[in-house]
Amino acid sequence: MSGDGERGTDDEKNGGEHGGAVSNGADSAGGSISASSAGRRSRLLKATGIALGCVLTLSLAGAAWAYWHLNRNIDSVDINSALGDDRPARAMVTPDGSASPLPSGALNILVLGSDSRSGERNATLGGGGEDSGARSDTAMVVHIDEGRTGATIVSIPRDTLVTRPACPRESGGSTSVAYNAMFNSAYSVGGPVCAVKTVESITNVRMDHYIEIDFAGFADLVDALGGVTVTTDEDISDEDSHLELEAGTHHLDGEEALALARTRHGIGDGSDLGRIGLQQTLVKALLDQVSATDLLTNPAKLYNVADTLTDSLTTDTGLDSLTELMSLGRSLQGLSSTDTSTVTMPVLPAPFDRNRVVADEPEAGELWESLR
Image (cartoon, rainbow, N blue to C red):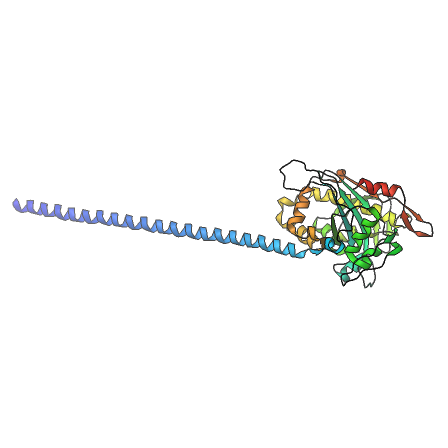
């Protein structure tokens, strides 16, 4: 009996030892699994943090590069330094009392279309032959009302005969005063500085800014926006611009839009006044296209448009950074074609040359007075 009891006791002891061994083994394994899981979670969180940090760094680096690239695209001319103080007074700005950081005062901006930034392609698109100098075929004074709620675009015919003032040259000295000179000769002989000085001399209106876009850049911008829709009242057939359009509504690509802007001989009497009418129609159509294109929801398209635009621009030094251009653009984002009026400076045929025009006074003077 006592032997059986002792065996039972031994079995209990052994069972207890084995049970203890199993229990201790389970506890040990459970502890090992818990530590391993925690380690994996820690490594996963660390890897995720590093990955997010890399993405953020790359995003910031990409944004910084994009800003640098777009900023670098812009060419500028220091017109204020070149012309000094002998200019019309700046418009008085009335404080609006708002806390908005965006500018809201009235502005006058001289906008020129030229072939100056890239010779061969611009000359081809512009329809011109070989030419040693840059040309300017389009000149518009864009007046933005105080409050930035409306705008008036005044086209100046390139064939207008004017007194071209003496203009400073980059190399020193100045050009001579020229009487009965074609308006667009100012750009040819003295570039943006002379173009601005000539406009100010015939209008007595201070040009707050200068913007020049080249022919190739204009065509590329229209393409980047997806084309532009215009309606013409008459058939257009121009061998020089290679444009053939029937009267009606058309969706044009960049080259076609540029051809429309430069068409002269295919409409009306073949004068510059007919071309100006087409240009004004095109400007309004572009405003509508920009309004209809939601660039803010498509970053890739927004960048493409910004890259195309800045690569074709020459500005004064007051608009020669992406920050300044964006500030101007944001202040004008409420403007549409319905808020924009287009008009041509009143002119009449020159008495001694029927192929040229002169300002029709006093109507021309009254128009410029309204923009001061």
